[in-house]
Amino acid sequence: MKLLRTPRQIEEGLVHGPRTAAEIEHLYATRAAFVERLSMAPSVTPEDLADLDRLGRFKVACTLWSRCTEESRAALLDDGHHSVRSAAKCALIDTGSAHIH
Image (cartoon, rainbow, N blue to C red; front, top):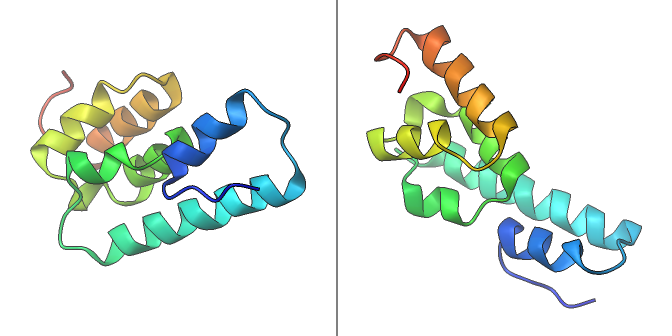
């Protein structure tokens, strides 16, 4: 199994090939480590989001919204996956932040 660096790279690598239990576990562990690292950072930037797969971005929107920069919030609200956009909109409403784009 080829080990890739980021959750996004891992997810993209699994799209066209078979998914073994080990590959899925590796993706989950890598995603958890990235999100854990972000939870300790003072802020979450768009560059941080670029390394995450869609479930990682969903988790950031749900749990780390308050640490997201304005640019990161905008990126989550405009994400390519509807689940990420929905989580970001819910976080925006829950925190009473600025209006929805």
